[in-house]
Length: 86
Picture: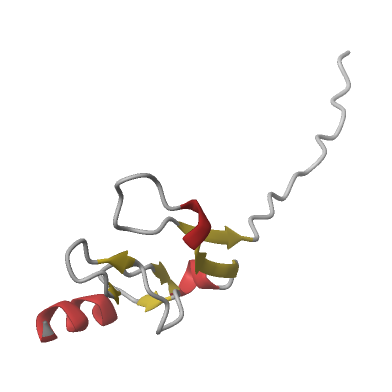
């Protein structure tokens, strides 16, 4: 486990799903746990608006919750200057 944490830190990933949010319901014990993690690079993390699970959208016979991540992705466009054709 320590190797995994070290590798995540070494490549510059950050955990973006807030701690304490359950993501997985065990099929036998019916207890909620957090098996899945969501990471972003420090570069992409500035675009993060929100990251959460959608408990109301859990599918039939599934034990994991869907994750909704909203990013602010701005595309910069530049108008092309007209080129004179002589």
